[in-house]
Length: 331
Image (cartoon, rainbow, N blue to C red; front, side):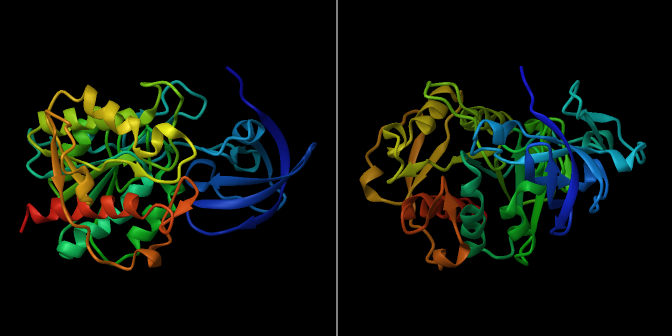
């Protein structure tokens, strides 16, 4: 195991809120980096910082940024507030949260639709699909630890928070920073069902993938089906359908979706918008054909794997259709 670290001086600070963009002068030149102020404290020009350069050194797209690991000008930092649940456990970045399980007992059942999203780019159209059907519904987003761990990294979440609709976030496992913190996906589902009408569970930005069948964090859709069904929820899967992915295994219906359905131990409903999928045999799962809501998709600035709505219209329409279908169960 290896980690890339550099010492440097902050030369520029931009942005606002919990995540800031800074420039750091190091012995190998100036580096653009991100700062999570909830973790490191405030940052100012002239501060001495240690940055993690690992992802950029490896030219990675997922998580491909430098991150400020520690701001030496903010030492010491002391623990304040309630809670004793540790996330990122036994790592140099372990942090304390006040999890909901420390505050209250969770219900034993989840009696609502649960949408399972394979990619973070499905979240925004799925939410607007729900609200296109019924704008009064509350959507709960459970962010798993399959992608980015800090929810503040998600521009989509910021957009949904400012949408004017009722939207609550839950960070499960080692993901952190949501409106509510949960120890695992089961407790997150139970908790969210107390406050929300429709739940959407899926990883934050980024995904771990390999060329192998099971070597991807996207496989969590299968375990999400199991979790939702075992608690009495109604699992609904957004299939990953792409037209212009350069990898053949992701063209059309992605092999990751098929693998997740294979490992699921309970039946789910898989929503498609195009009739060419109506006769698809995914048993024991049920293929659902549902028309996508008519919205101005181009206005949402949708992106997945670097491509937008014009290239991957069916991908985004399918996510919106799943949201609409879930909302239809409550009307």
